[in-house]
Amino acid sequence: MACTLNRREGVVYEAKISFDPEKVKKEVETICKEIRKSAKIPGFRPGKAPINIIKKQYRNLIEENLVRALVPAELDNAVKDAGLTLISEPLIEEINFDEKNNNFDCVVVFEVKPDIDIKPEDYRGIKVTRTVRKITDEDVDKVVESLLNREAKFEEVDRPAKSGDLVELEYTAIIDGEEKGGNVVAVLGSEQLWPEVDEAVTGKKKGEEGEVTFTAPEDEKYGDAAGKQVTLKFKVLSVKEKKLPELNDEFARKFGAESVEELKSKIREDLEKAERERQQEEVEDKVVEHLLEKVEIPVPLSMLKVEIQAQAENQAMRLAQFGVDVKQISARTIAEMVKPTAEKTVKVKLLLEKIAELEGIEVSDEDVEKEIEKLAEMAFGGDAVLARQSLEERGLIPMLKQDVLRQKALDRLVELAEVEEVEAGKVTDKVETEEANG
Image (cartoon, rainbow, N blue to C red; front, top):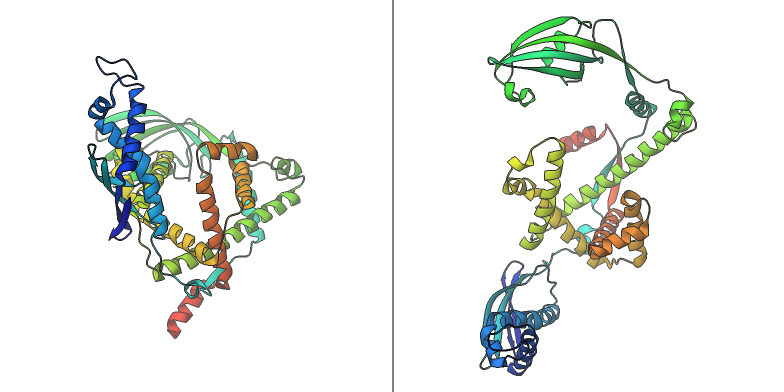
């Protein structure tokens, strides 16, 4: 038995494996006996056909079973002995099987985890800035205003329509001679109507009619009417004014607070938490970008394909949410859209795994449980047992461990960085000053 590894190109390797004839003979006999149990061969009862006939009739199946029985363990040992890490499904490129002499050898092609040339001095003490923004009363008031608007009601009024009003229109549109009509409800001044129509409706009262003619600009918001002559006749069926609820303790209780002050306090806490997370992500991104520019990281094709598929599926779902008919977009087009991001994602994953290796970072059972608890809070109603069961059934625990490992490595990079805080709004001045001093 022998296995020779050769590097073909980049992270692609081949393994030439040959097996001891005695071991092959023994394995073939075992395979043939198993096949014979259910083989249907004319003239013989199940389980009674001679082995030589089984070998002749089921040669391809025997070959497939030999590969499954002998190759994985031999390849795994050879890869480990060479200090490599297999990252792709091995491809059997060539098989030579001589059943008469029990000779069996094959050529297997696979990808290994790339060796990234990075040393601790390359990532320790990276200098980055963190923009710091203080949460103000104005920020809190904006959130309160959005909550008030969310709970607002529209009440019919007897006056000319103005921006912010909800209007219902009955209309007939003639676009390049083609007529169509219907009813529409929209808020004036919110870009829900074409600008020309919005302007024509503003100032009209309930029951009043109007007409507007224009050439629609070559803009996607005009849809099929873009670039065409449009005449739109309309009648105002109703005008409704937005009525905001009163900001009081009763309103605050709708959002889990006992008073307006408590509501504002909770909003401030949420905003400050979001700001801390933004600052953390900013530093993480800058540190990673610094290393990506400095370190060469090969992108294994097998990892890239998996990442492209995952990101393409997410992209398709996002497009569908925005009303895009994804059936009209080829899978190849979506894959090309996400390819640059997918390549970067693979590089970042490999980089962080290398940092974890250099820093001796490991994932404990406690780390895994904490991550499962987070997932449970987000998607399983806080039921960590159900969350773990779901992950185990789908075989996702190893993937979760890798995610935790990479996050710990990223946290370590931030911990090792030299971070300078800069107030938001002063970053531009700082950059311009540094460029001037050049």
